[in-house]
Image (cartoon, rainbow, N blue to C red):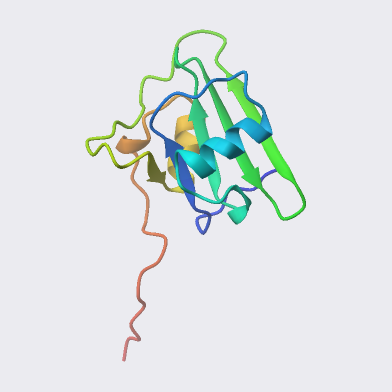
Length: 122
């Protein structure tokens, strides 16, 4: 099972992916379109054109995980848009990915920052 932690780098591809692709096809999208190394341990999230399904690709050091979630009804209403044509992916925090996987809107979630300096109290 994949454990999502706040330290993980999560990238959501802005453009829909062809869901006939498997691990090798999505890994090539990571390299060519997203300009990222699929072996880096980064979590890559893709959606289909109809926005009814997501695929998550991640390398865990031994092999790839490919997870597929298809909604039984409805669509994923939230998806990031690219204002800049040179940007192919958007970063998400782990708690935002959990919300997205539940078909929610991750941009409306609030959580404590992953890291903040702690100052000693005297």
